[in-house]
Length: 445
Image 1: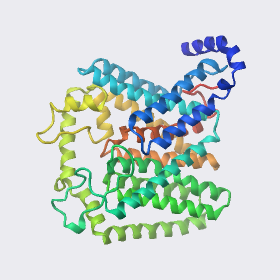
Image 2: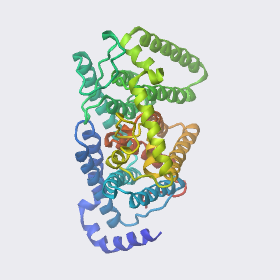
Image 3: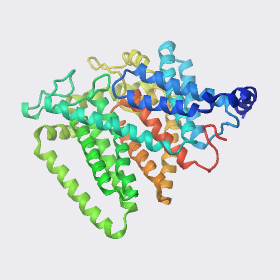
Image 4: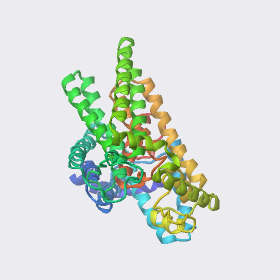
């Protein structure tokens, strides 16, 4: 690769500096800190602040590539699809009628891509740090869970119209928690908690692996509290994602149990399902919220989304090759030409439709192909192996399943709080499943 020749040339020039500099030799610690800062600030800081810490990690990684000897780049099939996706997005940006808005959106996408490369480049040489990064995410999840319960018991008032109350009795109005994520929105909070919830599984499965059953019990309580906090958001898309996560988690757990314990687990799972169903039926506010999922046009929020979907399909038909260009500002300006009166929208409320509208059909196919490649490798690895790596991959797979199902009915996926968690989970899959097998997107010795 031409890029590797440039890196090799740069590394030869900076070799004397690298050999004498303790900062350059210890740069991985600075990258690790930047990743942790992204994780911790996601729960309360604004988008710009979170992105600055991500940029810090990207800059440090570039410095490492240019100075550390024998660092090189190579690519897998999944990496090629991701590269194709970003090349198509770039062409889409160049042809956008609102170039400046679209270019701004593209720069945000580049930050996410840079963070992804930063993460996998760091983890490949520091596999032991995966545990600590997941623990950091779990710590944030627990803090947010406590805040969610606090907001629920305080019966916080709505900041904006978060549910259709025109057809609800007062006792059916749900208190929707929103945590500390900015901007305050229960759908964003639900999406973030859905993406981050599986990280708490590390508090269960690693102790079980080491036969620390009491610690695993505490971890199980943390997991349940975080799951309940998702329910308290009232985010119906997160409900669908949560059910998906539980199903995937149950299948993975069942796979690794001995025959006797499989029967016990099946009985427990059936009992848990019955308990959840009974809880939903018994609590009027929760029942109304869950059943509104199936109300179709009978719920104003559902009806609003259907109108947005129809308008976005029209947008896609007119721009199916390269789309309109990325970015929420770009989307909103052009959406105004297609929207039904009174149904303004900031996004397509479906991440796949959003990608198709913004960057065209081929970008959507490339991105979905990238996801399929990584998920397929992840499942294959889980089916073959029985070690701690399977725990990390299971966490990543469960997280991705929730994110991608939630993305069918919402686009909070594009918020940095969820985007960075998404790329961390994809990065974990990339590093573990492609170890010693073929080529890598990230640099390696």
